[in-house]
Image (tube, helix red, strand yellow):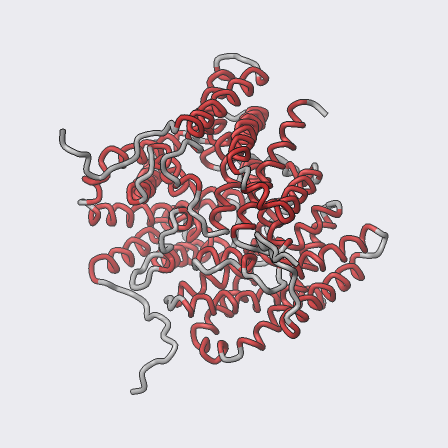
Length: 207
Length: 207
Length: 207
């Protein structure tokens, strides 16, 4: 297994954990945990593969991804309180998973010959869509709408940095690494220092 | 028309009825009834066909499915009160439709050469996704999150039984029948005897 | 650029504006504006292309669509109050965009050899799905469930008129124009004169 493959499975696992924790907040039965773990873990990559017509969809080709997501869901069913109390640690793992998933997204898009714009979108989609599906199904406030945090923004900035590197002739390897570093860096800054973008205010205060 | 085809249309019709009843709870106009009937009836199979790259999508190939779903929607517009008062009967019809749809899902996946894991997922998706879409669009509590009932669980158990049968060399026919019986049996047990899985509790009572 | 292409981009732009206004109601940061503008603008056409297996998906083939949607999102971030105060004007622009998108949807379906039923559904999906995704992600009442307005109905009637014209031997050009006129006409009647369909009432008053 290459480093990239190991990172892919690790992302699926961590996203699965966030799905399982959402299931614990909704107090579901074990099948509900599996369900949310799976859609959170593979939702983004599935949309990417369907839109780019990559056949087979990644988890149809490698069903071990589903098993990894299910394992994460069951772990949450058994140990969610212990995981919740480590929420902070999980946020950091999620930041790594996000960075890795965005990198995987732009790499996949580039393999399909996508240009800069589509590559950036595919990076964001791979990193963020699973979490959005989880939040919509659970009727929680979708991540992308949570104010005061960089999440989609971190994904977008990382994807843009990676896509620009590839466009300027850098290889896919260096581009994914740069992408991951930028996405992780911004997300980490948001978690650690509260970095954020200005929000929309309908009436800015007069100076 | 074979028995399998007749069952497929019957499932589309019954799922369409549940969509129409959701429209009646939201007090929509007739087009809203058609809309919800159609997405409930064909949503799961559409996702299955898109992910497995089965072309054409089943209702693009056989648009009569859409007409059947629309008929169910219109029937609800006219007779929803009478149907609501037979809610219990409809739950039993829905159990049959679920069992039939899960069987159709695993059969389709097997035809595409899917392995056990993907086959199970496709069975669950075909049986449950339409209802989840209906609930998300209507802003009702999604079925999969409703506690104290076996629904996704019944679908998953049936799909697993069918997939295992096929893996062990059983034909597609016997496998679908076993799948349907298991899914219907669990759903029926949940409706009739209140069978359920243990739910997640953050603090189990000390003994 | 042909008239049809110009109309397509104009629809993407106007749908993007409605996405951006939803972001302003949720008081998001700029990336949230881009996100909602993009899914509103391209969601419907994406589902159409994926279901009909049209490759590449329209915005993968012409990424300028994404830039147009992003521009609409940023304009909302800067000028949303001014746009909100012109809400009425925007509703009229949206009616034009709807009519144009439904026409584009039935044209695309016809090119793929779809029959009447699938053509109508693709028209409705292209016109309405982006807005439904926007509303679901923002947790607003989905458009299709808003009572007392013709929206999906206008799309469906226009699509049906266009599909019937094509079925009766009319060319794609005249059919799209008729489709657009019917859709716009009904939506305009709803905006200007309050046209609506009867809603479902569980207990009609006795006469």
